[in-house]
Image (cartoon, rainbow, N blue to C red; front, side, top):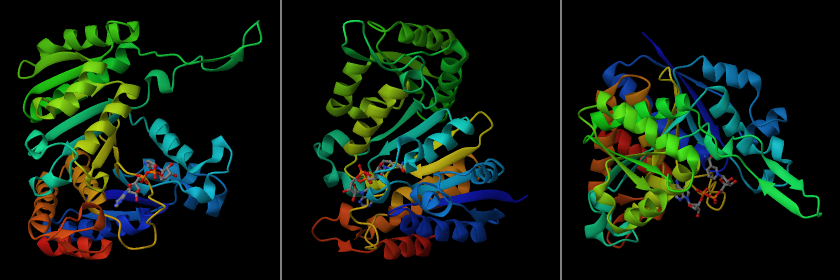
Length: 357
Ligand code: NAD
């Protein structure tokens, strides 16, 4: 049975890094007989230039008819002056909300070979392997009412609404419990239940579901403490689950524990298992076109795609092992380069992963 993948390279370094991930996918396809069918579309500035909007309904429909999407990155100075509604980032928000991609997986893994790249002491982070599960389509980023209004006294007031329904909490909680079951069985739910009622309900729902997952040890932590613990002793965590805003902030902090944003993949899934896979970083306009971007975050995103949407665990593991082998051999793109290693280009790094496979 064939598996359909839509490739959306996007802007900046997007096309450069995605090209390497596509070569890796073709290699595992041949090796494991996966029957992958790849198609390509436009998103972000690339789509604005071609069609006048960051994601057309045709591309959205085509993406929704596949099993998974692999995305590079969107955005860049060329489109920064455009109105809010047609900026490149709107394309991302549109695909996430229209395809119901409510669960965002952000692993923060520190490869032992790169322990020196972290700003924390190697002993604090060596061997770090945590997964942050962030709710992506609700919470304060989407809550209504929202806006900026003028009060009777003439003063302006900005306001947003932090809202979560029980069903929204339950589906992200189940996703996180299931992820923890497949890992080390520890789930830490992050909230601000001492102040925010929306997160009092969040905590109640997590507690109600916990008995259904006897192999998972559930704990709760306030977000301020979680931020502190992430930089103090990050290895205490296995899976963390939290709402949209807290997850946005904590997952970026966790990303930096690993030293390079060029190494970090992500997945956004809906209830059917369909997912969009992309590196955590942006389009890096400062280095676009120079052939020096690190393609490993995108290659590792392709591995997550095989695992979570295409039911091809063996191929996913093979890619992750190949990346580890390439790092063992001392090859480094500029962002993860340290003395004594061999500096390579985007294409050389991609080719090395293909060769290791
Ligand atoms: P960025 O992640 O693009 O870049 C931050 C820094 O990290 C830059 O110095 C960049 O050179 C470096 N970097 C990023 N990815 C790298 C890689 N693979 N290899 C080597 N170095 C890498 O963030 P930014 O500069 O804040 O944003 C640039 C553009 O990207 C903006 O238009 C922003 O809106 C957009 N953006 C898009 C996404 C996305 O597509 N999901 C996410 C974040 C930012």
